[in-house]
Length: 440
Figure 1: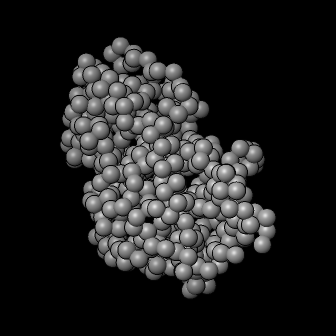
Figure 2: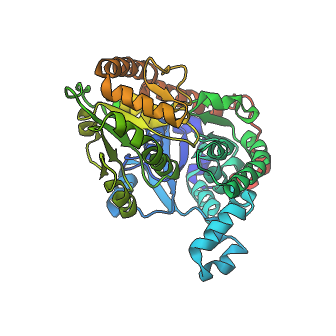
Figure 3: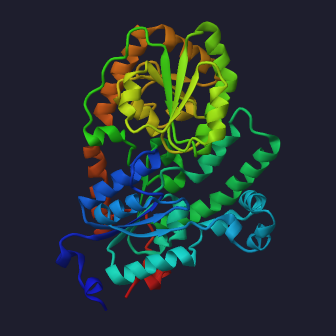
């Protein structure tokens, strides 16, 4: 037994924690990375943290070096895709893109929720070297592919409830019939997987309080999303320019719900807005904006595709309000909190408002639209009634400051970690009998 594994938590004073995330923790330019970063910060206040990132995208050498030096990065691993599994990989050379899509839509979901040796094997090697007292994972499929549910003490940040992500897509305005059949098949396959695996984690976190209606998540603790700018201590916002007719939409454009929502908004809602407000402007901000999307947006009157910007606060300072046209997804949308923190109200779809109904009431902190016509009328009102939108913005910022602080986030993480390490958390099944390889 190594020295690390021979020491107990009490002897070390601080627990040794492994955090396994989807994507990275730096730079925190998109919502997923921001939550990863916040969770890492909170865990580092409790124990000594190692980080493993699971992501298929390229990582800049400078960002990897930063995470190694400041975030305890130990490994960057690739999440296996459906097309990597037998029998799909036999046919992938014929047409990689088509085979991957077929595998994703028609492959068995359970195979993507099992420990994969190329990922779980690295986790086991790290555990043998470092002797972790606790493992923490973000997103259920990534955590189980890494085999975290096999550890005796584990916490899962559910964030997005898998079945609800697919269920919300069934309500999108333009989903074809064949896709509805595929989505329903995914939901049927995922239900028993979630019922079987979620209880294997010692504790659970959710970002949306509404997710706790599911039996598997009744014991989950709320770990809210936060506007990352508040953590950085940025200066308070400035009021919008007089007679401002500019709105912004901020998203990561590599994420399907964001691009789909923007397309629907521009095709079905924006023409109605221009009829009443011909001088209306919409600036489209965010990372991963590919040339095809940029060219498509440039052809629309009043739409300005800006792409990634280093300083979001400047964009918020020059706009009157923000728009979040999201029609599918799970968890909660950080972009809503971000806009309100910057002193700008937000026009949101019903999906984007989920999880905020109690803390950010409709008509008091922001404008909520349950259908496309309501999005148009809501936008027109915000473009033409500056006193109304400024009143919403002031109330919205006050609500965000009251309900979404890093201090409360940190406390929730600390209390959960202490509960798990002391083996006093109710509800989770003991995992030690399921995974002897996690013990010396």
